[in-house]
Every structure is written in C-alpha cells, then in structure tokens.
Amino acid sequence: MKKVLSLVLVVCLSVTMLCACGSDSKTEAKKESDKTLSMATNAEFPPYEYVDGDKVVGIDVDIAQAIADKLGMKLKVDNINFDSIIPAVTSGKDQIGIAGMTVTEKRKKSVDFTDSYATGVQAVIVKEDSKIKDAADLTKKGANNKIGVQLGTTGDLYCTDDVENAGLGKVEKYNKGADAVQALVSGKIDCVVIDNQPAKEFVKANKGLKILDTAYKEEDYAIALAKDNSELRDKINNALKELKADGTIQKILDKYITAE
Ligand code: GLN
Image 1 (cartoon, helix red, strand yellow):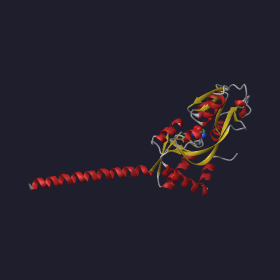
Image 2 (tube, protein in one colour; image 1 turned 30 degrees about the horizontal axis):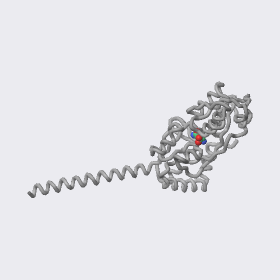
Image 3 (cartoon, helix red, strand yellow; image 1 turned 120 degrees about the vertical axis):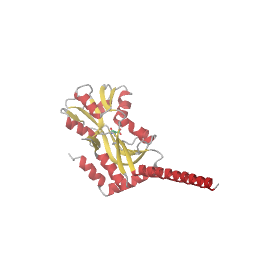
Image 4 (tube, protein in one colour; image 1 turned 180 degrees about the horizontal axis):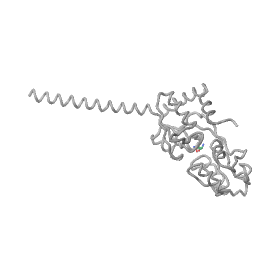
C-alpha cells in the first residue's frame, strides 16, 4: 500500500512539475513576442523604405527602430507587397504597418493609425516633352491619359476615382512604383502618380523625366495598427511625441531627404 501511495505521489508531482514547466515556457514565449516589434513594409518606396544590399533601410525603418528602442523592443522587418500590409496588421502577423502609408477614411475602417510622423504629396511624373503640363490636365474635360500607379496606393485610389471612373482615361496598376516608371520611360503610359519623395528618386534614376510643379494631393503618413491594440498605439504615440520633441524624427528625415 505504501508503495502504491508513493507511486501515486511521484506521478502527481511529475504531472504538476510538467504543467508548471509548460505554462512557464508559454509565458516566456509570450514575453519574447512582447519584446519584438514586427513591422510590415514594402521596400519599394525610397527613401522611406528600400533594399540596400540584403537589408531593408530608410526613413520608416529608422523611425520604427527609434520607437522600438524607446519601448525596449527588438525590431523585425517584414518586407511584403504594399496591398498586403493592412491584412498583415489586421491578422496579427505583424504588429505595425509603416510604409509611407497615408491616413485615409477607408483604411481607418480596417486599422487604427498613430499620430502622423511625416507628410507626403501625390506628385505627377511625366516625360520632359509631355503635353501634360499640370496635375489638373489629368481630370479636365476630354482628357484621355494612361496613368501608371502602384497598386493599392492612394495614387491608385484617387486616379481610379477621379480619372477612370469619370471616363477621363485609364489607370494602369503596377506592383512596384519602379515598374510604373519603366512603363513611362518606354512610352506605354503617359504619366505616373506617386508620392513625391519616391518620385524624386525615380526621376533622378531615369533620364528624360520630370515632376510637374503642381501636386495632385497632400497627405499625412502614419503607422497602422490592429484596432484592438490601443495599448501599443498609446505607447507608440508617446514615443513619437518624444522623438518629435527631441529632434530625432527631423534628423532621420534630413538624413534621407536632402534639401534641394
Ligand atoms: N502614401 C501612399 C499610400 O499610402 C503610398 C505608400 C507606398 O507606396 N508605400 O498609399
């Protein structure tokens, strides 16, 4: 009887220990994921994010790194298609989306945004000898241009609404802004509508192109998060406030954007 009792005791003890270990490693795993800030981005958007060698670098990566440092977290970069960023954030695959992403009412229906950390402008790139002289030419009566955009960006949304749906031309959607620019260079399309900073990089890298003086639209860039993550949003907003106040954000912008 004694033997049976001690056997039962041993079994009970081992089970208790196993359970304890199990839950311990679970807490450890959770703590580990709490310590990593995983950002979804699309490294086709210089100077905000682009690939240099085998690394994703740029303004957004530096800002996310500065935020992660403030929160005592390690930064992980997930480089995916631009139109996969919001799904990655809503599904919890990544905690934040930071990709020169414009705050729009439509996006706000699926994600939350932090405070804005930069502004952008939708610019129009044309060939130097283009008959398109002004952004307003794209939407004037009788216009009939082929406009290149990056799929799922605000440039795509505006042009689809204002031009294609208005019967004023056609919108060609590309996975990468650089592909739209190549289509313009080879004469397949008449212009590209894209954010002004990448526009400048693309014009620098390709001969015979220019950016129109008039812009299409001004916008605010912010970080996207899942809707049920207000704790992280508040932490990031606090970090952003400090990084704006101490000049870090400006310093990062100046590092990548040289005044002309
Ligand atoms: N600002 C634009 C948008 O939010 C483009 C961003 C991008 O291509 N990375 O749609």
